[in-house]
Amino acid sequence: MRHTRNAQLWKGTQTLTARRAEGFKPYPVTPLARWLRILASGVIGLFHGCIEPDLRLTHGHGASSAAAAGTLECGVCQEEYQPDGDKAPEVLRCGHSFCAKCVRNLVRHHPYGRRAAKCPECRDETEEADVRPNHLARQAVLSLLAMRMRLVSLPEGTSLTHQEYYGLVGLLGDHTMKLRSLYRASRDGTTYGDMLRCVGDKTRLVFVIRKDEYVFGAFVSGGLKLPDDPTDWNAYDCDLWHFSLAGLFPQPTKIDIDREKQHVYVAGRQEVYGTKVRIGGYMWLGHSSEELTADMRSCRQNHPGPNVLAGSGHACLGVSVEFMADDLEVLHVVDGQ
Image 1: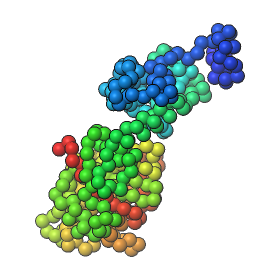
Image 2: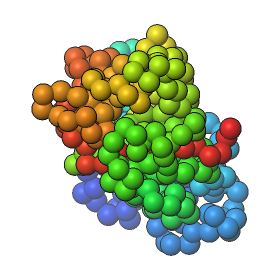
Image 3: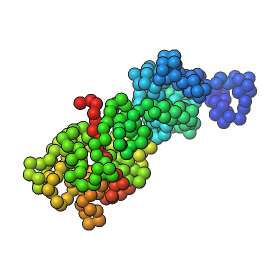
Image 4: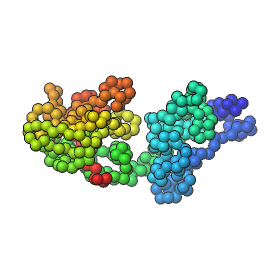
């Protein structure tokens, strides 16, 4: 009988009074639900310590340090919710919410092979077809992101929007770190010499490429190290990874590079032919080909499928493999050195 009543509850064909008369019980008021009620009512003092501590705890097994910073996390993976995609909150019939990816894993690893998710909190089961998006939680995540993004100051002269910049510093590991815009092709010139002049010997560089709706790039820890011979190349290893801020994924995404491919090729100032900078073997800046001139915005970029989208062969973070970017920016991580 309990499963029959729950099925009717999900269809929403009865009033709450009628349901209670038949023995129905509303979903439990979880910490997440209580927090969302406060958010929905507009009584938000999250950044001023006005909300009781228990209402700031992330939902799931215990609290996370991120709760104090005003985040909502999945109780299984402890990763921050996103308004859509794999990290968007979904609600089970018991009322507990987890990210979409973890819910899929719960279904995939059901102890008896059923197409159902066993709740890690209360052990109740929800058929896969009965899992629903938690729309209120998703709206809460959007509201929180908007609030937090307003607290972030953009680097002077950057091309990044508040949303893009907030996503970038999140990928770098700390929303409080500061970046400085060193070079923009649209502002400082499009030649290799222009970029070298602006970047200098700075390390911990972030390259941002903008093309139509796509915004992506790479982090390079070692900076741009020129060869001793200005007509030669310099190849060196350093920590690096690529990322997408908009266009390919629903949220900012870090793309790890195999360790053996974490190297940078930098051309000398007098090198005439070929690409000026190659990052990780997959991102070429100042690329020269029949179709593209040796402008620093001339790019070539692609990734092996397993590092981006499983089983997709090679994938582009931008509009095509070879393209002329709308803008190229280089930022320097000021904090954390």
